[in-house]
Each structure stands twice: as C-alpha cells, then as structure tokens.
Length: 277
Image (cartoon, rainbow, N blue to C red; front, side, top):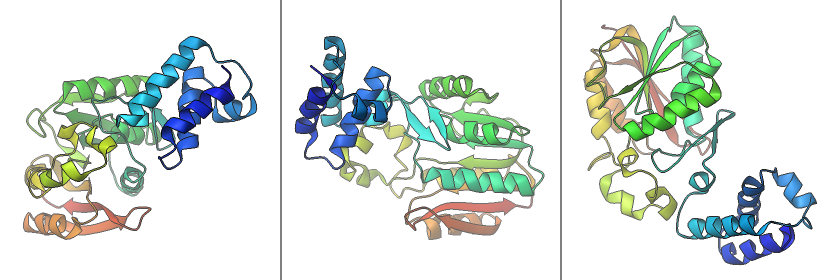
C-alpha cells in the first residue's frame, strides 16, 4: 500500500469531519516522521505494513474522540513544541494572549519571581522562561502526573523551572512579583455538553465547580499572601466570566483591573495589581 492509498482509506473513515484530509495527512506524517509537504509530494511511496497498522489505530482513536494532540503526543504553543498526553490539558492558542501579556508586564516592570498555578503541561511557565530568561519561574500543580509531563517539557525545551506538587497554595512558602494561572473554569453542568474530544481531556483541568468560579475565588483570596507589594495577578477566563471575576477581584482589594480579548473577540484574560504585600 502506498501513501495515496493509505490516505484514501483514512479519508473515507473521517469524511464526516471538517478538515478531514489535513487530519489524515498530519497523522500519517507523524507516523512516518515526515512533514506534510513530503506526504503530498511522495504519495506513491510505499507504507510499511506496521506503519499502516499504526495509522489505522490512530484513525480509530480519533473516531473514538481522542484528540489528535494526544494521538501524536504533540501540541504547539508560543512557537514551541510540547509533549502532551491524557494527564494534561492541551495548550490552546487563546492562552497565548495571556502569556504575551505577562511578557509585556515583565518587560515594563521589575518582575523577577513568577508563579504559574495549575501549570498542567507547563506551557505557560516554560514559554515565559524561554522568552524571558532572567526571571525565576516556579510552577505548581495538584497532579503529580501532570508535573511529570511539565518536567519532560522543561527538559525538552531547555529551561530551568522549579516544580512543586501543590493544591493551589498549600505547599507554596514564598512570595512572587507575578502570579499567573489558567485554572479550571468550566461550569460542572456544562462539561457533559462539550465536544467529545474536550471531554477526553482531564476533568480535573476542566471542572470549575457549580458556577465555574471555584478556583478564581480561592486563588484571588489567597494570592494576597503570596504577592510582593504591587505584584500582578493574571488569569485566563471563560468568555462570559469577565464581570464575575472582576467583581471578585474588586471585593478583595485588587486594583488596576483590565481585560483583553482573544482571537475570537471574546474576553479571555484579566490582569490586576495588589498594592499590599
């Protein structure tokens, strides 16, 4: 069987999906360790039987709702390649808005120490350290399995980060100039309605409680004890959570609150200061 025949088999299986041709090409390219252009140009090259079997398994996994990033153990974020598996949330381009804003804050202020809460794959923490080499970054997560993935990514990308297994601030014992977090923020009763591929991501990284605000409330309340004077608190938020999160921040004495939109024109991040410390 050649590449063209292999792809046609995949096209037939995924024909009801948007962008199914590119999905098949991407999956096969990863199996053959080639790029997409090679696949398109060398479509008459033979595919070994073992690789075709792997292709069949990958297509079936996709049909069963497994995200393509988990199939290939690969996701791209801030121009970097991250290893991902079922233990971590898949990094998404909208979160780049948060990282880009934090980088701007670091450049304009005397930011030295940064904490990334709920780090997951480590995408935020690792990207910040990669592009802002002089800062000291700590990353924490309640899941030891997630931290194993984050550590693998830090080594792969070549950055030095301190990792701590912690339920939010429970094992944190120092102060920071900036705390950043993309916490779970989906309402519990909304999760069953999500796309099957999203539902196959770790529930612990999705479930924000009954109102989706559980983690914001705790982080906002407790961050004041872990921020240096005039420190920054930066969040990713759900598209409809700007007012609720802003209200919680204001009630807890945070100042200079502002938000920014994502590529889809949805409110996506909230940034603020705490002038205590």
